[in-house]
Every structure is written in C-alpha cells, then in structure tokens.
Length: 434
Image (cartoon, rainbow, N blue to C red):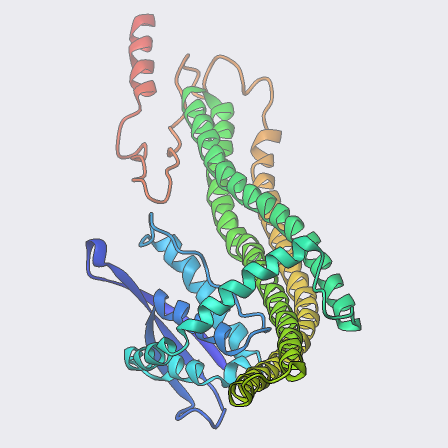
C-alpha cells in the first residue's frame, strides 16, 4: 500500500479558515474497493483517526501527528512541512499489519464524506463515557501506585523485567533525541544565516570592485558574484537539510513521546488488574463472613448471601477480563518496543546517510565556485594594481559589475543600461588636467 498526501488548499477566511489535503492511495489489498483512489481530508480528520486507533489497539505505538499551530498556519513552508508529516503518519499506518486493517483506516482512505462515519462513532462513544472516568481513575491510581513502589498483589514476572528495561531505555533515549533535535535545528538555522551573510558579503565586494580600477576591480567584482552564487546554493542547502535532516529528527521526538504513552497504557492496565485482584479478595471475605454468620432471619440472610455471591461473580468476571486485556497489552507493548528499535536503526541510518550525502554535494559546489575565482586573483600583479588604468588615464575605473540581488528582489541595471558614476567622475578629472 502506498499513500501520498499532496495539494494543500485553504478554504474560507478568518476564524473559519481551514486547509484540506489530497490523500491518494494505491493498493493491491482486496479489502479496498479500488486499487487507486483519493479523498480530501482536514487536519482534524487525521486527529480523529489517531484517536480511533488508540482506542481500538491499546498497547500499540500509534504514529504521531505534527503539532497544532495557531500562527502562520497557512503559509507555504508550514503547509509543505505539515503535508510531509501527515504523509509519514499514514505511511506508518500502512506499514503496520494491524493498523492498516482497521475499519476506520479504510473509511478514512476511501469515504469522501467522513462525517457520517464520525457520527456513528460518536453515538457509540456515548455508551462508553463511564469507561473514560474509569480510565482516569486507573491512571490516577497508577501514578499513586508508581510513587508507592508498585502493585501489591502481583509478583514480578519476566515480562515486568523486560518492561522495566524498555522504560529505562525510552527514559534515557528521550532527552538525547531532544538534544539532537535542538542542535540539528540550530545547524539548519545557521545555514540560513550563512546564506544571508554570503549575499551581504558578495554585495560588498561587488561594490568594492566598481570602486576599484583595472584588474583588481574585476577580481573583486568576480569574488562578489561568486559569493552571491554561493548564497543561493547555501539557501537551497539549508532547505534540504531542514527537510531531510531536521524534520525526520523532530518526527522522532514526537514518536518517542508516543512510545512513552504506550508504556503508560500498560502501567494503567496492570494497575486495573491489580485493583480487581484486591476487590475480588475483599468480596470473597465478605461472602465468607456472611456464610459463617448465624442466620437470625434465614430469608434475609439467604438474600444477603445471594447478593454477595453475585457481586463476587461479577468482580471475578471483571478480573478475568482485566487479566486477559493486561496480558494482550503486555505482549503488544514488548513487541512494539522491539519493532521500534528495528525501525529506528533503519531510519537513523537513512537520515544520517542523507545528511552526509547532502554535505558532500554542497561542499563540492562550494569548492567549484571558489576555484572559478582563482584564475583572476592569481593573475593580478603589481603593475596591474597601479594608479593608472589600462588606457593611461588616471582614475578611470573599469565597467561596473552587476550588483547581486536575491531571488525575490529586482536585479540592478547593468552598466550598458545606466552610465557609471565613476566614469562621469573620471571625465571631470581629465578635464581638470587638460
């Protein structure tokens, strides 16, 4: 399955403005109605899909989405960056054997009007409102439990040891990934600053070349033109480094956060299981105490004992379900951690190789550009740098070299279009010597 995200289009204005993306799918999977199709999706649709997958598959690492942004969310660089991040989100889903078979993934990729599907999910979700509060309670208990030192009813297992190792690995990885992203982003920003500095440097030497006479002026002007060319090359290089180096590292910052969230799900399931063990033990004690008490009113005593039995059976069934869910989540989490480590190795190899290749190509262009300046500089000699120009007239400067301009600025007029002020000054000086 191949999924691409393209063609961001802004709709409406003001507070109601939003952007849609074209999501194109090519697949040979039989569960889809066609082999090639597309739909248009908003960012909120991607968020909805992520939420459905997280609810359907506790214990799986759900791919991360790019963060929301309020300012400058409609400018072209931001939309291009978000487009690539959304495509990465869907590509990770497509490569996961469980996630890609989810019915909501199929609806997201195929159904143009997704609102009907969202509506049916929302109605079903109302029935599960209590489960959210149960989850919140479990999460709070989980935090208290971790601070207290761990579950009290369950012995430590081999899976617990592996989970603790995974937790330590991710806890140590997160600050390192954050640190790498901090410095890669700084490096890219310095590249953009260098592009501007080279442009300013080139402009300064171009103007110097216009002010100087003879071959020295020509050489200085050529040096300025070379720096201007390098400013454009460096700007392109900075954009490539942002796309192929900085963005993938930032994506891994988000992914590591998702891994931590997955580990927290397992902690929550363990705590729920542990709590139900204690609950069943308490209800057994209640049932046994009632059974051992003399029956003052046989009918009332039998009724109370029956209620205690029903409560115990209900809790035992909940315990069985919690145990099964905990075991499934534990197996998923450990499998997902192994998968994460394998894919991280492949991804970082690709990221670093791309960066090294970019540096090789960029420095080759830089070297070639500077080499082109060498002949004119090496050809300079003392006689050429004297006070008289090549025509023997004192102070007459060579033709002005074109002043470099950025891609988004108009180019300065060439000497053939506009007389040089230095030439006019030279003529006035000649008249004084006549």
